[in-house]
Length: 165
Image (tube, rainbow, N blue to C red):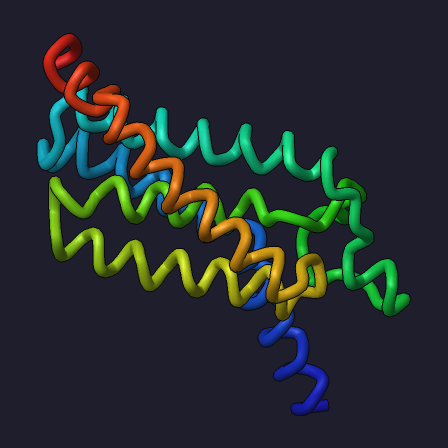
């Protein structure tokens, strides 16, 4: 009885990490912007542009590299709220989480470190929940990080900060 209760709690934690933690990260940025006034609107727009861009790039690459998800290959139920049936590679959750974390590094160092840890936890949760392979989350992390650097190189970050400040 106690073992099954522990398994239910463990599965609930994995489901939260794999399915919802990235949304709490987004909510945290909105909270710090709206209620704590840590960020200006231009910074928030820049952060969300990076997250959206990383997600779109990941979704495009999923169509280029069709791979079955681990839960399908192994015949086990995924430990997520939904059963994703699209391609496994790359992880859009990982790319979005890392893009979000890296976007914070110039605005708030402490929040960047916390969000970077959250991005690692999200990625780990996607693997443990059986919806991604390790290579999927590494690919997603690479896309998220690369997206932030490319947007900075293009000057879109400065553009948003100036126009929307």
